[in-house]
Length: 406
Image (cartoon, rainbow, N blue to C red; front, side, top):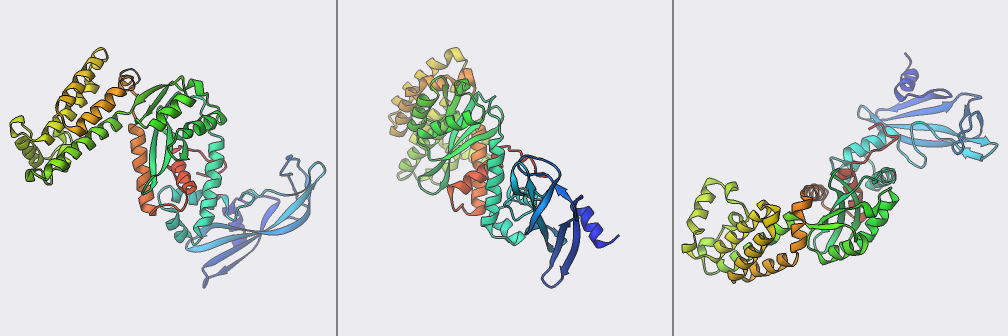
């Protein structure tokens, strides 16, 4: 079999296309394959699909293809423009690449696969291309896939933010709690992000009034956004954020008491974990300093935190009374951090009690945020928020890419 026939079979090229010649340079580690079309060959109009259109003239186009072993491969194509009686003169669409791209479809599929597992800059170095070109490819397919996404069945949404960089740079995430996919990501964490999500939901076939549950933290901006843009939805305060508040308050008590109680040094993680998740040595240390007779304020804060955890275990009909009793216990402790948290939680009692009906939780979003932060750390950050959002959709949007062999 001649090398030209081999290349034609390997590339899947069919008439009227044909491989004309190939050039191989071992010094530059490059293989150039030249593709032409048969004399008298006809094509489809790229606009109306009419068949039998003859070539009007040609222009030279080049696409980067998958490597041939360790050698870079480029397809050089004498690409015709066809004359259509209805649409005029149009450049034909080639089966191996999309209009405006310098890469073949197979190469773009290869890039998307790599970029899901590696930083884009690392992939750019691996394939020998500038990362700006790779970002254009990623954004094209993410935008195309999202345009075809169907959100008509979405009824329960979790809302959270993830940091773009140190400081107050955030991206708000809206996630389908039933399908475990990020529906929408947008810069900021203001109330207007809910308006942007509502518009995006409608553009993908979703029904805003169909959203019955929203799960989020106690951010005033988020709560205002929910009231303004999803007034029919019931809001549930995410239990993970509640426990984070209690952990932070407990740790604040420890930091203040540690100045006068040296036995509290190097005990931070003991107070942030549940007793059954501690190592034996940590459990022994906790048992030595936890009893009331020892008199540590940190131990009292820890007992208050553990008592609140039992709130989630209460029967629904008894949860409200338990919350009031827990609030009184926290206030009587006279520990300022715990009193502040108790006052805050009591103010959100209705949203907390909604959990016993909805069972909504942002546990999926917490895992998603960790995945995003890990990708950000590997990439050492992203140059723009648009790049970060592109990666978020690729990793967590459960997108499909029609037209690509992946």
